[in-house]
Length: 77
Image 1 (cartoon, rainbow, N blue to C red):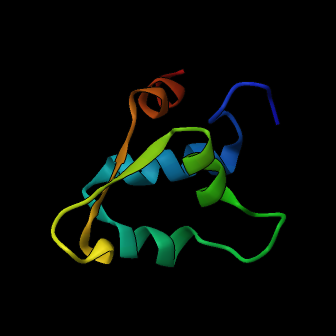
Image 2: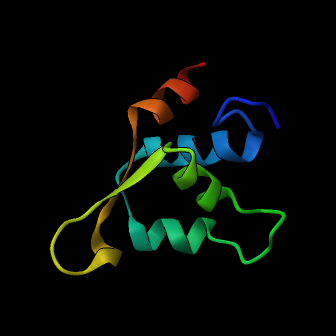
């Protein structure tokens, strides 16, 4: 892994997946959450500020997931 956020292959795959079309939080967690400490792609992306959850309504699972400016920059590299 490099020192810059978003440059590992799994993180780039996640960012590309989010960018392809609108995704919900529930959809992202279902596809990307892992209890395995070797594959924390979702947690790494959130911690690095690459993705954000855009709250819409009362139900978090229906909230949108979006790339941040940092996430878009990492994807464009």
